[in-house]
Length: 334
Image 1 (tube, one colour):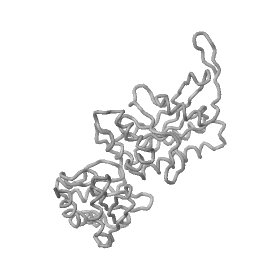
Image 2: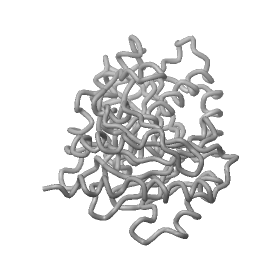
Image 3: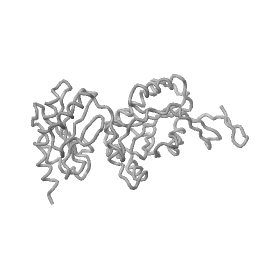
Image 4: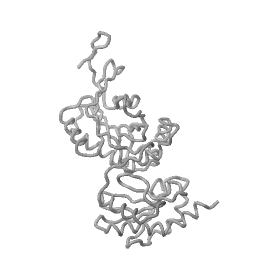
């Protein structure tokens, strides 16, 4: 493979290793997207995730969408199936952390990058919403793409709502020239952005629970977001970082009914609400998770998907009735 520049023929060169390609992509993340797409920026390379191992590179775009990049060279002995599986392992792991926890893992780099991408609009909450909803783009960056890998990634995009991109990067002139080729463009799934309340298809049972709850809730206490795997509820006067939440735990076939504390400004509420641990709502015991969101904490109780949807919906109303006065009183103390 060669290219011609100024009538000179340049031969394609091999990358020394995957670390070299990671470095180029960290410095020039625009190689992975087209000119018509949102601007992307690098957050950090080689991020140690809780369960999936080390993510090669984390990007974020100006819509607040996290992007996981997996880098592989053709000479790597891993099978193409293993490469794809590893990429989705990273996404699964990322969707289990809050935006605060991810920012802590990268030493505050995520917060800074989001501010730099758009200083006029806060992308922090949007990025957090996308993480929690599992709306995370995947880019597999390679030096060469064989037919098997192309086939697998095209199939994933055609038969799921996942957004997986395959990009080949060619190196010339000792790395002074890098030529990208987007082999599979991805699904371009709906991303929750600062300009739109985008949504994705929900688990039917989870959707039933949410709909039953909303049908009986006051306007103020109806669910407020449109994410795939969770729905938040909070009083208008409360900061968004203290809220009730329905959560769809697909891996364990459970629905969570929860009260979250997600920033330092509301962390003091933990001392008030943890007293409800051990009490029962709708025949289910409330638990206090002191490790949630960097030790800020959450109350939660869990129901099997075999439970009655009305029972789960009613339990949220009971949790709100049980705890909201204490939360409100503490928030309004001068």
